[in-house]
Image (cartoon, rainbow, N blue to C red):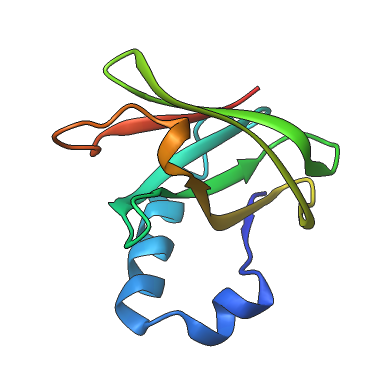
Amino acid sequence: MQQLQFETSWDKALANQDRENIERIFNETKHLNSSTIFCSPIREAINHKEALLVSVLVHNGTDRLLTFINARLLYSIRGEVIADKVFTLPALTIRPGVSMPWTFIFPKDSYTPQIAFENGQLEIL
C-alpha cells in the first residue's frame, strides 16, 4: 500500500494548509497507476528569477528505488511540452511504495513562457 512521506526540510517548513492539500491529493490519487511512477500536480508558479516551479506529488508504485540522477523531466500542458530539463538531485530518493511531494525548478531558459501554467502534467522519462 502506498505511503505518504515528506522530505525532512519539507516536513519542518510545510504550512498546515499546504500539508492538508498534499494529504488530500495523496488520498485522491494513491490508487491510480499503482505499479508505475507518476506525478500528481500540486502547484505551479514563476519565482523572482523567472524560473518555473512545478510542485508535484511523486508516486513510486514500483518495486525499485526512484532516484533523480540525469533524470529527464517534461512538463506539458494540454499535450504540448513547455518545459524540458535533465535533473540531478542526489538527495532525492523515493522508496518503493512511497509518495513524496517535491518542487522541480525549471530555469528561465528551459521552458516556453505561457499565459498560465496550471493543469499541466510532469513526466519522468
